[in-house]
Amino acid sequence: MKEKQMAVCYDSQACIKCFACVVNCSVENRARLQRERGTGVEKTMMEKLPHLNYLTIEKSESGVFPDVKSVAALKHCQHCEYPKCMDICPAEAISKEDTGAVLINRDKCVGCQSCIDACPYDVPVFDRETGKTYKCIMCNDRLEAGLPTACAEACPSVAIFCGTASDVRAEAKERAERYEKVFGKKFIVYGAEPVNSHVGSLSYMTIAAEENADPYMLPENPKSGVSIARNVIKIGGAAAIGAAAAGIAVHVSHWKKHKEDSVYHHKDEE
Image (cartoon, rainbow, N blue to C red):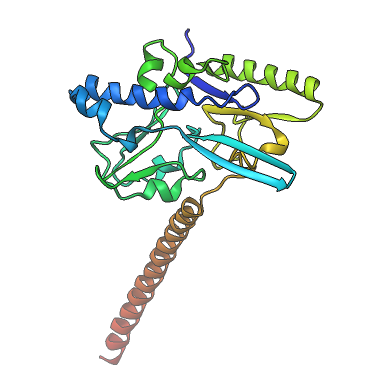
């Protein structure tokens, strides 16, 4: 049986910072407008459409001159095993597909921005022009058609690669082990295994030197305060409802007993 679960991996060590992935992502999303929405070529290719940029670059610097390290990291949806954005969405506009991709249905999205608050990676972006939230869709349509993601297709150094989750995980771990032997330092495959119980494993993995985890936005224990608070409220609410029900039951029992005692008291007086 063919494996349905797919994955993408970004190898920061192999990346040459050409950012062809970012360009091709935008081009593919513009082509989707033409294919799926019938939007004209003029609009899709000539107008600024920021909500179609699912991959963005986050630059950071660390260290003290002259030992300064500059990092240009890719920011994108991690496609969590347990997507908190999906759990919190009141319109049920977010779904987890068989491929592993987490998608926002923009026709259902009400623009409440709850997913932004719930995401432990701070990924979804609200577009004021459309009134919708957007993020990387892991090229779910391309994966289902047997094609690579747009970012992987464009990468000249194969720093981004995709395939079945098991194949990608195996290739990523092999690369990390090879880098460790060559460079003599620890490399991680972020997301290949569950990151924590909050997000689980990731369908968009990242290979990076362990010392560069922070610059590449790979937190050791990502959590969303909003999601945690919501679960606490849900548990607390359930407990409160149970306590209220128990209180009502005690009150009713007491009232019935008081009523019975009152009736017998009057009979004795007669």
